[in-house]
Image (tube, rainbow, N blue to C red):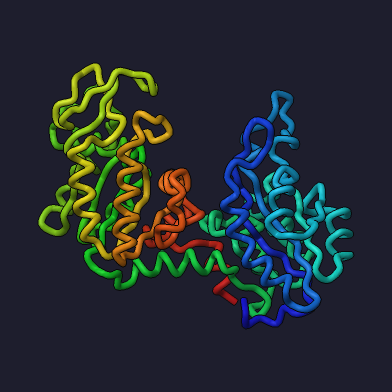
Length: 402
């Protein structure tokens, strides 16, 4: 980006302002907005530059009102304007649509130093379809294109991928956040410092199969926790009670265990905090994961698992963490996830490189205010997951190609 001739240009910046809102439509976590600010301020400091910002917010076309219309109030990017204005330190204009005459008039009348935020791109079905005509209309709103929306880089959508085809190579680039995301992933994918430990959690094995298989060829240690662990215990012949199990993935889990044997150190949680119901107020007990009572379900890793996992993390020089160790949203089942977070922070303080792979593991890090105590927290759960699986991201490819 620093090497493009952007002086005097009206620049389209694809940002990721897909942030959570509460029932009063207030932003509850502005991390993604904050992460866009260095790129936006850098561009605004160039002579004669104005900015046109594109983003989506949630999936409004999948959550229509009963009459079949879009809930514009709920999904409007107007809701993030106060946060953006405050963080950017300047007025931000707003267009009620991302295409059409009003958007074009506002964009083309921008003065140097001005910023225009366009309405949610996903109000148009053409966005997720990667429609060429829609993409061309978006491209017509600017003279250069910067993609800083890593969280959607794995989607071949109009504003994250196809739009780049309408700009020459010398007028399109990554923003600073995209560069950091890609560099952090590369640090683990290409000659990581050893020992390299991957901590893989979350609910479903099916969501992480490709990552697990990829990591077997890369890591020294693989820690598996969260709901997905019980599918592995079922593959080992364990009694897992009412714990979450993907019956159609038991064979896959068994194959992963076989591939890992003798190649890497694979750690499953020895014990769990089990509950008699999926509520924070449920009765709990510490159980061996091979012998969970029929009326109980594992909802967090237990003290033996925490101790074992922490010991392995402590000796690591490279750490990838993707997915929580339990149902951390419930306070009584959050200890495992937070103890692992503390272990990752401690290893980082001793010089390890730690990448938090977005999603719930990033939410846990932010909840503990540890984001400045690890090496990097990704803003894109799905995008980072696909990148670490070795997939090519459309939003990256479209910038790198001419």
